[in-house]
Structures are given as structure tokens and as C-alpha cells.
Length: 290
Length: 255
Ligand SMILES: Nc1ncnc2c1ncn2[C@@H]1O[C@H](COP(=O)(O)OP(=O)(O)OP(=O)(O)O)[C@@H](O)[C@H]1O
Ligand SMILES: [Mg+2]
Image (cartoon, rainbow over all chains, first blue to last red; front, side, top):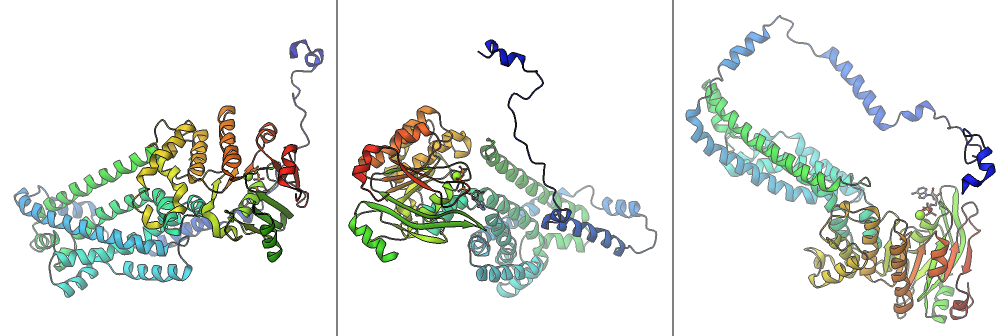
């Protein structure tokens, strides 16, 4: 059709087929608008790194780092596998403590996290719960263990109690940050067609928060297994008692066996969480629209 | 304003929404101002206007998602009730959002059944939806051509398929009032006609009312009773127009 049009043919090829209106040029953006919160944080952090570099210094004497370390490492090898069955029993107790503590912490943290999320709760609730969580996090796990041993005696229950409190401090923070990073549009739209706040949370926020919640929870379980092997130092059950003894008597080959066992458990958990995360990602990442 | 409106409602029991002197401002800019709108039972009203004119904003004011700075909206979802604020009768509003707002990490069936959350209390839906309604939800999906696998996640569907899921959610809710924001923007001609036909049927046969943002003039003249056109530059230059002249007598003068 256009071929038969003489005007179409006579038009030079290079010309724009459609005449354009005069287009505005890109408005200039003032330089200070780049100083948003994110860029400022990066800048301050870099300054802090440079500053800190001037403050840290070693003993000043020249030390033979390689020799020191290799002498220390030799004590660990070869690992003494004769204590494997005793270690396995203590390891089981450690894992049991970690699982129970993580479970209780997840249950409590989910409730607390809703109250600590700025998009879900009034600010006075948010502030008070966050204060509480900060105080819990300030206390190291070993101190929680000491407190729990004082309260219920030197046994595995003390370990569960100690790690539950310790984990609440972290999970409460992580969960509330997950909730805060959620897009509220779905929940708001469910409210718009009559859902009550709890329904809007269950159907509008929870499905999106769930992958993050599981991922944080598995991380916490892994962390708790490592913590549970330390709190035995003060008598709160698990591997720690054994580790403490081997360290006291300088039996670093046995110490190594225990460390390898912990490594195996922690690594398998790591694989598990990676697998779960990948499966969830595969379902949610398929479209350009998300 | 309040009492006059209630009288208007008593005079005409078919009035479902009555908006008077509605004005919405974003920052310094009025999106619309002094807007009057009466929606009656069985009416299909098309909201038109160029992109950015404020169609979504007006729809949000009518269904209580935004609070207008001027004027007021009264809603009476069923003839026996007293006129109420939009926020008080949310469960009677079926909304198809421009951005769909589906639960992308949940399956299609769950998404459709979420339409009835407002009908049930928290405890009824805590462990899932009433099982005897799943079939009805599934049939709506199948009717709109997205019933192949009701247990797929929304994130695994195409844009147009997701839009049909959002429409199925609104139809499953079976509300007194439909607010649809460009419900056919991603659909082919066949499903666009199918969807608007279903909404039209809800209005004409079941006495529901539909407020629907539409761009396509041929769809508007085919399905709508009236249009309200918004002007992008002049907030007061909104216009009401009958597109079905024969329907005028039935609906009375008023607007
Ligand atoms: N959340 C917001 N904050 C600030 N301004 C907004 C917001 N949402 C919309 N606007 C502005 O309000 C005006 C009307 O927006 P609205 O979404 O109602 O337009 P629309 O008619 O629905 O357009 P479209 O056809 O593109 O969907 C637009 O100019 C837009 O830029
Ligand atoms: Mg819009």
C-alpha cells in the first residue's frame, strides 16, 4: 500500500517516519540529592574503617606467626577417633538442646516480631519490644547459661532455657525485619475487601514472609548447635563439658574429633537450608513480573 | 450534607453509592474536585480519562481505600441497611486492582477463595477455607480459562492469566459492588468480552453495581450504561455521560 504512494517514496530514507514534538532536555539533579541515607551510610562506614585502621596495633614484638600456628595445629592431628561414641552421645544431646531451644524461640519470636514490626504495630509497642529484644541480645549465650544453671541446675534443661532466651533476641529482630520488608499492598487489598487484620496477616503477609522466616530459623538452628556445644562449659549440657575437659588436659587430638563432628552437623544443615531456599526461589523467580 | 443524603437514599431505594462534592488532593494538586456521583443497583459505570487523570484515585475514594479531603461518600450495599461510610462495608466490595495484588506465593485456588475472607471470621479461615466452596472457586477459574492447574502458584502464571485470577477472586466474592480498575488491560479480545460480559451479567441479572475503569471506546459503548470522564489538567472538568440513551428513562434524571 505504501509502495504505491508517491509521497512515501520521495521522502529521504534518513528522515524520521514520524515527526516528533520538541522534547525537553533532561533536568539536572543537584549533587546533594545523591547524599541519601544509603550512600551516607556507605560513606560513614568507609570513614570508620580508615579510622579504625589507625587504632589497632599488635604487641609490637616480631612474632613467628607460621611457627606458632603450626605447632598449635600439630596437636590436633591426627584426631583421636576412640572418643567417637562418647562424642556422638553428647552430640545428640547438643542437637536436642538446639532443636528444642530453636522451636520455643521461633514460637515466641513470631508473636514478638509482629509487635516489633513498624508496619504492623503501633510505635509504642514497637519501641518497647525492641528495647526488650536489645537487652536480651546484649547478654552473651554463656551468661544466659550461667543464669539458667543457677535457676534449674546443671543439666540439659538449663541449656534449652538459656538458648531459647538467647535466640529470641536474634529471631525477634530478624523476623520483625522480614515483616517490615514485606510489600503491604496485598494485605491492604485484602483489608479493602473486608478481611480482618489477622486474616490480612495470614493471607497477605505470611506467604511472602515464610521463606525468609524458615531461612532465618534454620540459620538459628545451626547457630544454636554451635552455641549448645559451648554452654556445656558452665554445665548446661551437651558437648561443652567434653570440650572443656579435653582442653584442660591438653588432649587436642580428641578436641579435634569433637570439632569435626560439629562441622559435619553444621554443614549438613547448611546444605538443607540452601536446598530449601533454592526450591522456594525457583517457584517465585520464574516471571519477569516479580 | 449528611442528612440531605440520607433523605436522598430514602427517596430512591436503588441508590447504592452516593458521592457528593468529592475532592481529592495530592500535595498541592487537586486530582478532582466537586465531583458528584450516584450509582444505582444494576448499573455499569465506566470511569474514563487519559493516563494519570485520576481514575484509580477516584475508585479508591469510592471504596474507602483513600479518604477524600472534600465531600463524602455514602454506601448502602443492600436496600434494608442504613447508608454507611465505605470503610464500614468493605466486605461488600469486590475490587480488581490495577496492580492485581494477588498473593504470588500461594496457589490459584487460595487466591480466589481469599475473596470471601470478609464473609468469615479469623477462626473460620485459620486452617484454610471451607472445603465445600473449593469446587465453586475452581469452576470460576475454569470458566475464565485458567483452570488447568488450580494448585499452581500465581507467580507461575502469565500477566493475563494473573489478571483473570484476580477477576475470579472478585466474582467468587460475589459482592454487591464491583470496583474494577482496568480489568481487561492484559486480556485478548475474547476474554475481554467474556469478563465484561460476566460483570454486565452481575449487574443486569443480579442487581449488583459495577464501577469499571475502561479505555477502549468500543468496549465502553458495548457494556457500560454511563461514563464518568476525568480531565487530567482540570480537576473540576469531570463529565457524566449516558452511553445507553434508552437506559436514561429507567435511571431517572439526577445525573
Ligand atoms: N501514591 C501516589 N503518590 C503521589 N502521587 C500519586 C500517587 N498515585 C498516583 N499519583 C498521581 O495522581 C495522579 C492520578 O493517578 P491515578 O493513579 O489515579 O491515575 P489513573 O487515571 O488511574 O492513571 P492510569 O490510567 O495510568 O492508571 C497521577 O498524576 C499520579 O502521578
Ligand atoms: Mg489507574
